[in-house]
Length: 218
Image (cartoon, rainbow, N blue to C red):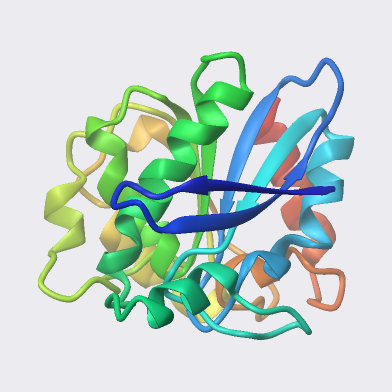
């Protein structure tokens, strides 16, 4: 892992961790959930590396200090008196896509979102040709003023969706207007967890989810 920095669409400097694999199968952009930062993927990214994928985990401006790490992008946004709501982080994800696309030899990437960033990922997907597929954890109507299910009808790339057991119906509802042949929804038998933390080894049933995700990636 090495730290990298690049500018968001509005010029705000974004901090990120790059987990590189030689001769990789592709690149995955990792976006964190609310009240969080790029450290959400310290356990997950190496496992994705083992599956053959380089990963770029970014700090979005909507987040905070947790897991013993600061959200450096959020800190800069606050210092510059920029808003840090969920939708305000959209240009950060879009800039992350552009940066990861270049790291991937200008080939389409996989975008992975967690909670609010899963919603942002879905919102961005219909109009972004730099995306190959989506992986979304606990997507929902998290974006104020946006009816997400209506906005994402035109998605034409494969989607892997997972959530906590209690969020299964919410996930189905958000994705209901998309061509269902494009959607692979993992429905846990265990309680699971909100966001990408469902991949962590501390969450019961994580092994089954990883097997399903590996099949999707393959």
